[in-house]
Length: 179
Image 1 (cartoon, rainbow, N blue to C red):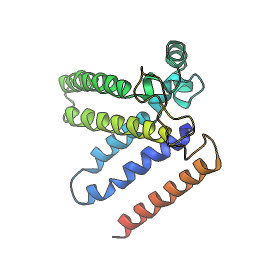
Image 2 (cartoon, rainbow, N blue to C red):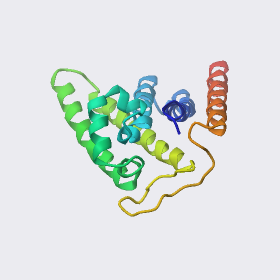
Image 3 (spheres, rainbow, N blue to C red):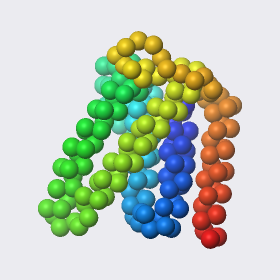
Image 4 (spheres, helix red, strand yellow):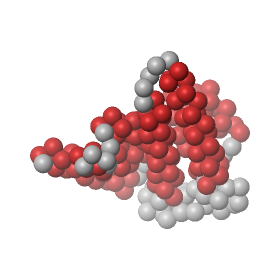
């Protein structure tokens, strides 16, 4: 799947959480933090491809990583998910401590919600890529791709999926707004 489709998938998931705000399970601010994490997380696995949207935004990191590993390998695997979980957990604690030390209240909650959005977006990205003809090396470093070949990257079905998710998300927002 292409970068824009991954963003749409992540945001659609975030929009599906809007009813949780209306039921006071999340505050609007917490959902905002989750949504930010979803957008970034939905792009991060493609840091291993030098021409991906995320690699274009941070080219030095993208070029370096793409030289060290193959696309849809480590960063599209269970091992990659585990690495990111550890990294984001550590960063969340460090950032929250730093923000709290300078007087920013609720920093721990903000970083927790951002990290949960990052993880959800990251995992949604891998699931979406599993639905393509190429699949992913889910059990990296073992060989073999896991795939359910429903979509061709950049193909008509991917475009239709994006349109469908945008429409469903718009209906969800309208429905919540009218109620």
